[in-house]
Image 1 (tube, rainbow, N blue to C red):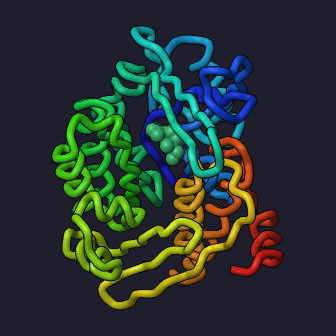
Image 2 (cartoon, protein in one colour):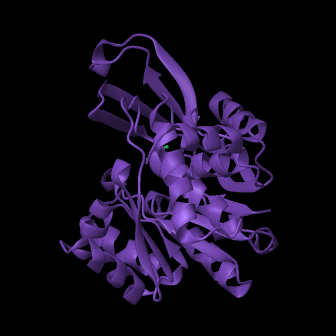
Image 3 (cartoon, rainbow, N blue to C red):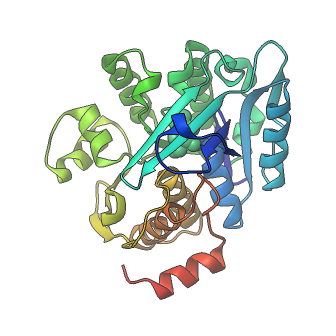
Amino acid sequence: MDVVTIGEAMALFTPDTTGKMRYASQFSRKFAGAETNVAIGVTRLGLQAGWISRVGDDELGKALISFVRGEGIDTSQVKIDSQTQTGLYFKELRSEQDVRVYYYRAGSAASKLSPTDINEDYIASAKYLHLTGITPALSESCYQAVKQAIEYAKKHNITIIFDPNIREKLWGSKEKARQVLLEIAAEVDIVLPGVSEAAYLFGQHELEQYGSLFLENGAEVVILKQGSKGASFFTKEEQGFVPGYPIERVVDPIGAGDGFAAGVISGLLEKLPLEKTLARANAIGAMVTMVNGDVEGLPDIEEMERFVQDTKA
Ligand code: KDG
């Protein structure tokens, strides 16, 4: 296995019309979740991914497993929970600049994930463990599951990559969010915050300073995402900036960060230098925004290379 990830995926409903969702009567049903988005992203690029989660014993849970498995991901560590249901998420595309997300996931099957769902051998079989700040926000037992996975990964020298993915709606308080996310960021090898997330965690600073702050906090590689502008990287030895790809029309920005993360993981696994890895990540993030849906725009290697050739960064 190249990558193992842990977290909740949901049935995603998007109105077939843009504008206020209250007027929509026709919806498309898709599936999404930051962690499965990344798993699908790396799988399209030719890697092998596994997903640890729980879904409800319901029709959407069954369809969700079929979908993720159909994308080529190992779902052997996904448990079916007969006590509760699969979470839902609605994405309202009011305009290009105004995309709103509504969760119906409190108490969902995935929120019941706990340390007993984390199999040590499974984590040890991976090269990378991918984590987001969404999973520890779901419940205390999810937080404990993430801690367990980190402990196993460290024991077996598995590289841990962490995207803070701050979702304020899921955290009871900003203080709690900060404390938990900084605690996890201190334990991992690579962190992937956006600039606004870095400001959320450390307060307002110059961009370069966020690199040092995450390094001092314990990470070895810091990748600071700046949306379509590009991304910066920081290690103890080097730092740099890689420009992004301008997109004429953003159809749906949600999921771009997960495509970016998939690009980072695949570049690092191919042992590309950080500049090339970030150029790949920027390209995939941009491609995701051109298509409606979190995962529908994720490219395979050939599509990605064609995009890079045809689009000037
Ligand atoms: O990164 C995209 C995710 O935000 C989306 O798929 C839904 O997992 C999700 C979440 O918790 O916000």
